[in-house]
Image (cartoon, rainbow, N blue to C red; front, side, top):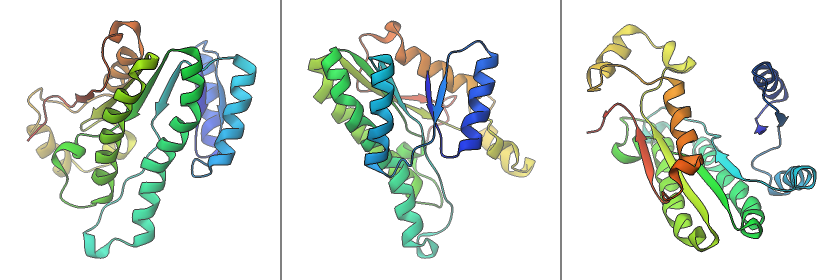
Length: 215
């Protein structure tokens, strides 16, 4: 497994944690907005391992604020990481998978791409782009036996969510028919399924993992 992250310290921490689980893992921290830098790292990975079977595009950032308050540079930053970095990674790795005549590309969407959110238009806009990218690329790469799918998480129990006050969380939980917010393992299991041979006839879907929290 190869892990990419934004900072050296967070990558090294994640690598050590995974190694404790007896996993073979390496970590890199290229600038995902720099095409040449990503290409250089991917070239090293291919040279060492000889193949790349699965790509998971998971990097992303969010923001809040009403449209008149959002700075143009902040909107650009979301598009750079949530959309452009996904395009860069996929563009670089696709020729490798084409030569292999197999591969799986998985992208991280969000349920807000389907029903929006009250403020912070940049994030749902970027995730709509992820959906379009996924659906179109699935058609383009199907003749090469490369499957492309996305996972759209709902409200998940991450550090960011756990820091929210009860008066914010409890009304959100009431909107979810399953009666709870999602766990990170719920999302991980969805990715594992789509990456596995159990999903060998599934391509071009955006899979909601949200406890049916849809409007």
